[in-house]
Length: 168
Image 1 (cartoon, rainbow, N blue to C red):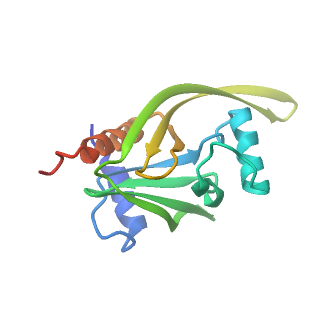
Image 2: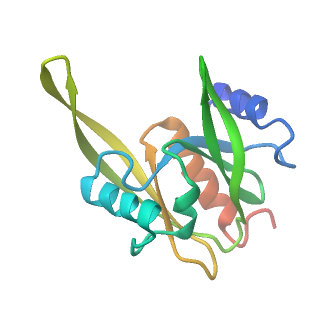
């Protein structure tokens, strides 16, 4: 599966000269627990504010609610996103890992969120794809992607490019 032409055009426009290679796939993601998973959201809050969280990657301290994962032929880049009037912009690069040797695991989940709007609570069920990234010599990082074509394209690209025989 490949990324949509619209997503690739948006990535090229937003990233400009921030990365040396052309993007292969990319998707907006939320850190684990920012999607409505209350126990993970609480652990994330304690970790970010008090530095006491267990089992979360140190990188999660610098992440906002929305971030961007971009795969190129040789690297996985994670960027912060900044909101602006009328849209979002790609901010600073949070981390970049070489793809060979990067271990990836995925899990499909549904998360139900409750929102108060007007005078009633509404429930919404979101399908998410949890991507577990295990860089060599570092703790694992879990991110939540909205289950869709661009998320599937990102995972597919990461899996094919992170294999030792890819590109050989």
